[in-house]
Length: 519
RNA sequence: CCGCCUCUAGCUCAAUGGCAGAGCAGUGGACUCUUAAUCCAUUGGUUCUGGGUUCGAAUCCCAGGGGGCGGACCA
Image: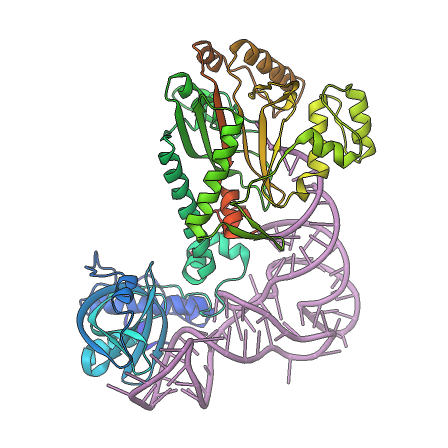
């Protein structure tokens, strides 16, 4: 198909093999053609993959500097800019290229009279997707399009594989997630989601720094996977010849630091839970946890509102969101409702963890909630809440006062021995955050751990164990402390306005793909 | 793990039992002000895989695979 290919056959290809490639699918023919072009460029003494390029301005900087340039203007502002070729319009001895860098897009005005015959031919042979660096003066066309009049053009990287559809982008979600690089090239919306995610996380860091928190890093490899109820990933350390777990929470290490006197700490880190994958769950996800000495759960609720409201303002410039057709303003106070009250309302009769287990199990069963025999009263109430209340919560709402038996690290409520000073934040039916007044009594903590371990030994794989080192830390004395965990991916979903966690995780967990050199 | 939906050219999509097509991308040609440029011509197919029904299957059936949604699971 391409004459150039005959001049530069790949060294180990037979003529028959070459024919196969050329008469094969469009993709293979295209890769062969572009690879041949790389050979031609090298043969001409040029470099298809040079080491660096001196750029004077980002495209946004050029655009900002000449925002008011009238149609048909010329300037003596000579710039060197770089980007990927996204569009090309060839009108004979004049070629218009649209290039894009991370900041913006701009048009390149390539005139044969300016760049010369040789340079013009080189530009003509460029493909969509190639990276180029150009130098020239800033100008506007007769129609007013800001452009760079190219006097020099250098190929920075030759693309061998064609871009997806220039107008429709990629729509196949599998391809979008497997080939995120291609998704990011062609889908503006995908890029926007990750810009929002970045802005949100840096907003969190700013708010926390302003509130006097310091950022720390704690181990990912745990001897015991504690701090939450979840099944862990298991791994093995060869030299120590021991089983290790990937962390399922940040909590227990961070609270050790409160014992150590650090007073206000936070960590933004990846945690791993060996559970199902859904629009709300990815096996690895990002959690922010903070712990504040001398504070309790009410302080932590306040900082939760502050963090998320600031993040929305910083990431999208507003605190107003539309969720399932309802407009809500994050700046409005967030309602607080006790879990037992919500559950009671849902089933039409009062429930409380002080009630006999059998009575609660009965109420649950009558309301379509399956009850496992080992569940304690609090667990049954939580299940009623999850089955009947959770999905209906749209606006940000603190659900408070979780029963003691489902909250092994939270402090007992000062007004009710069956409840804890704990809250979870729900928005749009999803749990976004979880916090409490931290249990700091080492004797009570040991008893709670022992209950957990008993439940685990009775067959509940997600329950915890007795963490002796953590108990030893508590014995040194942990000040009164408020703690918080926020699911960062879900906050990003909320602020970006998307329904799938995969839209805010760059490389979501997928089944492995069979990929070959030819595909 | 269960239910429903889906898989056609590199990309976006048609073809509902009767010759596998279009747009974009690519290739060749025209054009010095285009804007998803336009115009002329043109290459490109394991219709996810395997089996079955049928004179005939992208289309119907069965099995398998990938993916999506929902459920289950999941503080």
